[in-house]
Length: 466
Image (cartoon, rainbow, N blue to C red):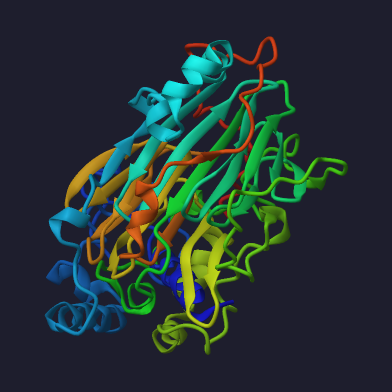
């Protein structure tokens, strides 16, 4: 695992491991008395005192790990004061903390796919209108460095062969389709990631009776790597305390067994080429990959050489054991930059019911795309309630924390980070369409009330409260 990727994963994990608390007003027993919860103690979320995880003077006296956490607080103060360190984003590099995809409408397709639509509507009016009816797109994250789009295609629909100037990737979150990139075609199911190098030609044909749902990531390549490994800062208190109700099933998986399949190669498809040779910026990143081929992290056996926070982690073995009980996390895609790090990485993460991911921050810019589970989200003191389809942005050094609200339902998300300040000019170039618009099949049009955010996640999980 690359040092920067491992550092980020471990940092996120360590933070979370440190977090299973409850906030003021967190729905706990109003009669719970302030007391010290011993590391490893079996305790219900109802009996964790409100405010137990705030970094108050009283809570810090109760916290057996306060010395460890104080080292994070001190380092954050030093780093922010250091002009040589990665700096907070300026206003032009910030976007809203939350995009409520669960409440948003669809975008105009021409705004997401910059084809020559005037010519298409003139030369192929029926096919152009069919494409508009069969494809939906919604930009859920629009940062100068990174765009994330929810992309839906109706049953049997075809997204014709095209290419874009910058690197991109697909991640399937619903349905199945034959996805062709250059000379290779696979049948992709939920959990499949697809690497799209700059100018690589791609084509999508839905094969499932249900609509295809993709998350489509596009990023500015060649960003600053120092943001990815510089600093992680845990600043809350009593982070080791984890409620019984948050213990995750040992066999936990994101997706229902009925849809969880590896991609399968499809032979006999005509290879595609762009009108210029595709780049090969990420040679170590597979063209097609699947989350089934990656194991959930063991936070007590991450290895010490690969992580910038390893010395601190070695002192906090109990919190890592607690994190193993209430969190599942795995890295599923990384656009690896040879000998440097990565331009984009994203992971699966699930946090158990009523667990708390306590206050923390980092120099790395980060997003969370929520797949399921009602969650209280706090960023720089602003409180939101997150549900499936919501996306959260954590700017460098921004304090953030989360608490899962529902009994028996974890928070599931895709979380990722990127190297900022890459070549943003890639977003200014039009897409290249490489085939005439095909006629869409009967039944490919998506219903007006189509719900992108109803995912086939594994339901009725058994939480044993071990």
